[in-house]
Structure formats: structure tokens, C-alpha cells
Image (cartoon, rainbow, N blue to C red; front, side, top):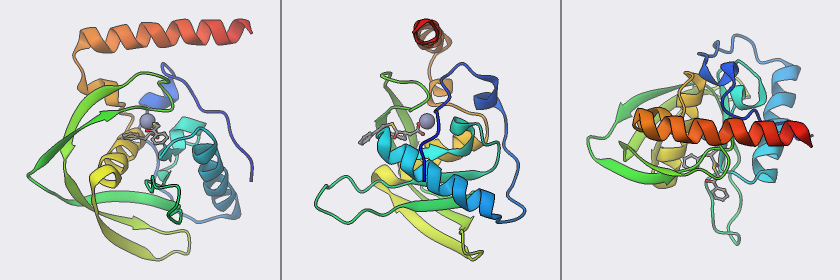
Amino acid sequence: MTTRPILIHPDPRLKKRCDPVTEITEELRMAASDMLETMYDAPGVGLAGPQVGLMTRILVMDCVKDPEAAPRPMVLMNPEVTWASEALNTYEEGCLSIPEQYAEVTRPAEVKVRWLALDGSEREEHFAGLWATCVQHEIDHLNGKLFIDYLTPLKRQLITRKMEKLKRERARL
Ligand code: K1U
Ligand code: ZN
């Protein structure tokens, strides 16, 4: 297991729709394992393929926040929302590809998601709370959508300019 560099917005790879997983290869298993390590190391509660330059429909997440509780690392491939609640929830979201920027985003409070697991089985689960917010944020990544796309053009432009500056500063180091 190793960590992989996380792409920072703006990057054309973060705006592209990812391709479905067609075969569960050893390479994909290694990528999933590296993505989990990268997510825990960041630290974050989720990570999607394109954030590490992998243009495939794969995401990882673990929204267990209690340090006393057992971790619950999850790997979801080809995830699909099969049901979304009418009730909405607003959460102050962050993104590992947009460091230190946070904004309120409103999404369905609960969702059911179906996906392909690493063992090849098809799974379906009901998510609520941070899990529901996180899985929707990560599925957005697989469709080339970022949380700032829910904001006004002015707020989005402000954050994008900050990220361009951050990338210039990091490139100078
Ligand atoms: O996709 C990502 O960029 C990861 C992102 C997921 C996310 C966070 C909040 C709401 C929706 C989706 C993050 O993990 S940002 C970091 C973060 O929220 C966090 C970090 C440490 C502990 C708890 C949360
Ligand atoms: Zn994100």
C-alpha cells in the first residue's frame, strides 16, 4: 500500500466523466488499497478515482468519525443512486482536491446506492448522515462534478483563483 498524490482543482481530469469498471484486475485492487491509504493519510472521509488521476468509476470512503469505533473502509465500483429521499440535508462540505475551502451544499438526506464490490458481488445499502453526503460527493467526482459547482459563479471563481494561486506557490517549492 502506498499513498498517491491528490490532484488539485483546477485540473481537466477533475471535470471528466469516468469510465465504468469492466474487469476487477489486480491493478484495480492495488489502486483501491492505495486510495484508502491516501484517504486516511490526508485525512479525509472519502476519495474518488479521478482525484488520484484514475479515470475509472471507483470510490472509497470511511465516515466512522469516532476514534474509539472500528473503522469501516468501503470500496464502491460503478456506484448508482437507486433511491433518494425527498428530505434534504445541508452540510458544510470540503474536498481534498480543493484544500481548506468549505461551503454549504444541500443534497438528499438519505440515499440507497447499488455498487460492485471488490469480490465481484453486487451490493446495495441505505446511507444517511455524513455517509449519504459523502457518497453523493464522491459519485459527483465520478461524473466530473465538484462541490463548488453547486455554488454561485462568483463564489466558484473566487475559490478557483485561490486554488490557482496555491498551485503556483506549490510549484515554486
Ligand atoms: O472527496 C473528497 O475530496 C473527500 C472529502 C469528502 C467529503 C467531506 C465532507 C463532506 C462530503 C464529502 C473529505 O474527506 S474532506 C475532509 C473531511 O471532511 C474530513 C477530514 C477528517 C475528518 C473528518 C472529515
Ligand atoms: Zn471531493
